[in-house]
Image 1 (cartoon, rainbow, N blue to C red):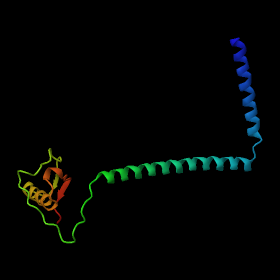
Image 2 (cartoon, rainbow, N blue to C red; image 1 turned 180 degrees about the vertical axis):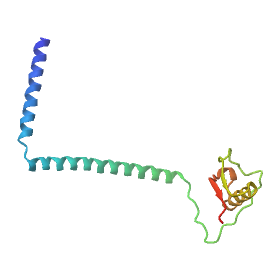
Image 3 (cartoon, one colour; image 1 turned 135 degrees about the vertical axis):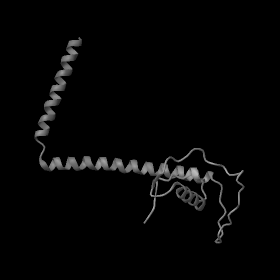
Image 4 (tube, helix red, strand yellow; image 1 turned 90 degrees about the vertical axis):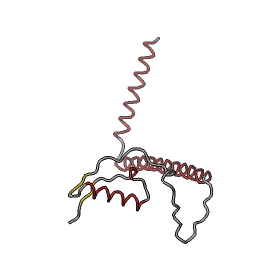
Length: 137
């Protein structure tokens, strides 16, 4: 019985292959172009639907995030006053930012430049990453 089933499945597969081959030989250039355009449009439509789903999902999570944040009072047009925070209360970032390449600049001047930049940016020095310092002549 298994042999009969195997032979029957093989015959069906052979007939399907022959029918597909014959139908493929009879396909004209116009029909092939229509089939190709239809296939491209199906893929394009699928991509558009995927884009819409992702856009809606992103909008949903952004709105959910905005709802969870407390409302911020509108800022005045005047410049905000900088509050002096004692050094003991400032939270320092752990670690360092790696090595700095110095080109024609002494170590002391490089340290002063990095300290000035950190002070102007109001960031701890170990949160900044200096790649190189070069003297412009």
